[in-house]
Image (cartoon, rainbow, N blue to C red; front, side, top):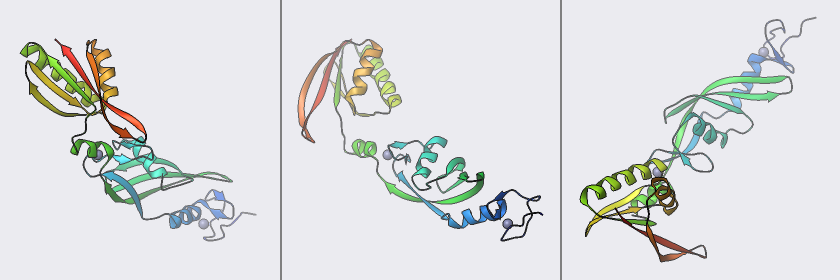
Amino acid sequence: MPRHCATCSRTDSEARFYGDFCEYCTREKIMRQLPEEIEMRICKRCQRIWTGTRFAAPTKKAVEDALHLRLKGFSINVLQFDGETVSVELGEELKEGKITIEKEFKVKQDKVVCGDCYKRASGYWEACIQLRGGEARVAKAAERIEKYVAHSGAFVTKSEDAPNGIDVYVSDKKTVNEMLLYFHMKATTTFTLYGVKQGRRVYRNTYSIRL
Ligand SMILES: [Zn+2]
Ligand SMILES: [Zn+2]
């Protein structure tokens, strides 16, 4: 005796079954429960998206992490994302095995300014690198520093001409510490108390470098 789908009467020789229903009707049932629109938090300055732990460039993995915040219980494989719409292959584990469906969602953009863009806009800095020496050496060092900092995800707040050199202000002192090791640059470091954040003293570092 063939089994018949309780909704469309297909038989089990025509389609795979999940409980009393064929795979087509099971997919339709899942589709009906999905929203048409998915909200995503996006920084309006840098266009990075919120993944649940941080703002990240919209790589496949980052978009999948962002969608997991809204679509619980599915495995998610992003096929296409352009900021306005997102196409995905969703997988759900049912008792009889995994079923997959493809769907395109509209993206509802929740536009915010991320912490990095906010810091950038407000001129935030934690480290001042004072490069001193011959003009050519200073210019070359400043260029290398700016490249390294941009690559690390931190940013250069500003660069200013100073007597015998350049002062480069950087958003993140940890990045600067790592960079000095990387470039084998010797610096004399001084610390200035900048404020208190969550009960912790916050220092700005000044690095004097002779080139
Ligand atoms: Zn059916
Ligand atoms: Zn941003």
